[in-house]
Image (cartoon, rainbow, N blue to C red; front, side):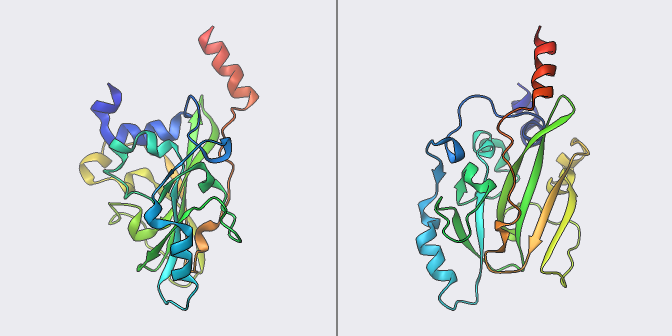
Length: 209
């Protein structure tokens, strides 16, 4: 199959090019989402608000990643949560219980990967975490400004892959927002794009019939 042959490269292209079909496992649709309870909000928030100098970051990925994690774990470290609540975090209460992790690195990050279908963007996947705890291959990431509290930049997916896989990847890019504050990576909030636009639905009907 394509996934078996292409491994993580094929899955990266799949996640950025196709919507997830079938029912959701949780998040905004009311189901149960995967949660690593070792990173529960109650325990981690106590660490971050009791005078500790350790930086804390939200840690989650949208649920699309969980369905292909067997391949994607070669590229990413596991988050505290796989949940579509990752798209929008209520910083005041965090009622969804999004994981909070300590971050010895300088930055928390939010990564937004586009979903493309029939040449149109239909939504995004999202990752939040500590910059040293998200990507397994960071040596090719662009240099970051150490003077700005928040910075957003465009990153090629090739920069997330080891050299032997990068040569087979596409030129697709994603947005990465970097910040240096405590629990600062609740920004930005985005739509999960769960519903296809009317124009994309029309294109699908034409293609099928």
